[in-house]
Length: 190
Length: 321
Image 1 (cartoon, rainbow over the protein chains, first blue to last red):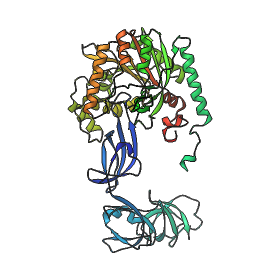
Image 2 (tube, one colour):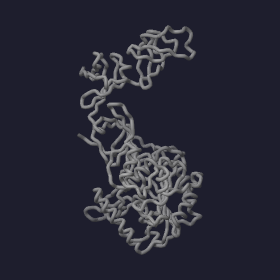
Image 3 (tube, chains in turn yellow, green):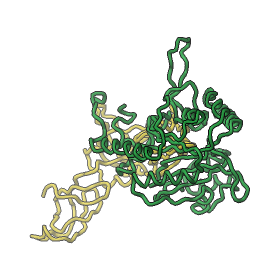
Image 4 (cartoon, rainbow over the protein chains, first blue to last red):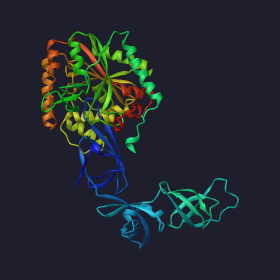
């Protein structure tokens, strides 16, 4: 397996650290003029999402992680696995378990595209786009003429997840949601 | 495409700020009768410090194979040869080169302001650095604290007596690391650069370094009779701005340090460069008791303009050079 030295660490590089695949987010070179050089490296553990900093002696190296990011279309869930299909024309399918899907489960809509991250050919993470559009399946009746005032209420989306929405939102509305914060953005259509 | 992009990364304001700074530095030294000098960047010898990596150049001087020359990591040796020839106080704005150093505060090619003051103690020279920095940045006078006391104050550990294991344990409790080393200085460097330096926002001189980090400074005894290097650094806003010494003038001691550094290079599997014999000969002839300091001009410009990275103050940092 290939190895990378600290001097080539850069954002996006996938490495193995303590056995786990990690993505490098940043690499800061720290060197006293007359002293030892270090690299303060910001990493994300791709298995659990943890983001932290580790310091290396410059010149230390890490093994490359066989991590592949692929755009895939979400097909369906059988309750145990979530099935995705490659969009490159191969129709190849993969099944991601609950550990890989994690919180993305809240934003999965059939036929939408997701980034599936695989390590050694097994899906380890599913990333939705920053914004998704989902239909409201349940919420209290909208208050007419209340489009300007503040105040929120819960609304259930087609994925089963609940978000806070303005009072004027009604069942059947399609909402734009920021998947990074889980917050309502705007109403796409009534 | 990348190579079509010829534009400088700095705007005209930044270029002017650089020009103003260089002029300000020259005007600072003129009335003080410190002579501006210009020594070679290219030399047949290189420093031996294991933590500095010169850029090598192939010089076609009629022999086969061509001679290996080196871009200077600082103008120190050449300037000390001028001191030995009784040229009095001198300064230089010197392009310097350090291989592999790229980061927010590092570019492989950068500019050092280096100056030497015969008859000055380390304290005298710190006063002068303070005056210059005050004129350029309008800063208050820098506080002064010893290397030992800053460790005691910030980390509650005594760098004079702590073992590498104690330093390692402290580093592991504060940082995520897996490196192993029995090298005391590695742990001191790690703790200083990660846990102390970033906290030094106000201008601060760190003085009296461990003898093992003397580099080219005189070693004296502190109040407890322990060996200590007459070396200082100036740190502002967490950035290492200057490094100075009450200079080592003893040629035998200098030769011993070169030899120790070459041994260390061998242990670390680093190239062993030819020792600068002309510099040693100059020391043997004798240089006046003096203090000298090297100050990063690009970093000073960062502090003056509020730039976040060294690349922001250079028209053509290494990626587009």
